[in-house]
Length: 317
Image (cartoon, rainbow, N blue to C red; front, top):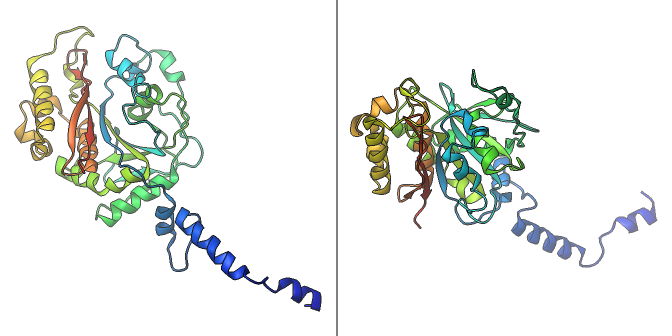
């Protein structure tokens, strides 16, 4: 190195102090790493912290919700942003637990780029198969979800790098967030486990609420497709009684009863012959914490037995 090069490389007086001051400010903002801090911890430090977001269970009902203006719940979902149901600020990302993704162990979809739109229904009007919801993937959220679950003993959590959004996710989201500009990640359910397992799984995800993540459980308050009727048919007694029991149990914080619904609820096995569409509720409820307060934010029916009852879970500080 020449003399002039050495002089140029020599720090200016006070430069070290100035550099350290910039580093300290950057650390406060969460912009840079510190020696000894792992990549996962560094990611958490960068994530903005704020008021904890509420969690939600949404009954998405029939896929025709995507096009049928006569379904009352469609208008509820479309009012999501104007009514500020989830608050004044849009979420940083959305984690959807859908009843249409079942796996033996938890799985997340790790998508870089736009999510594909999965048309996982059959025999419906052709326009429904032309609908697209190209929301960005949320690979960082997928990895954070995996990390939280494995730390809590729910591993191994599998990564799916090709699966897009099933209709349990994109149908309500296209009405709630029509611009499709919020990153979305999906988490699967395990139908060979029980409600308590999914409630505890949700508890492991609670930190996400302070990281700007909206946790949505998407299923149905009642889901027995074999007992569906015409669109305007009367609600049978078994469906009405289960739906009323669920509302009463949630609003009165009998969460253990909800976890053990098959033995505690009237007509539990009739309302849910298979638990895939009910476990998303347990995850959303668990993610809000044991002191969570439940609020019913929508109630309607179609086809006699499809309840669109939907709930907000607010954490009590």
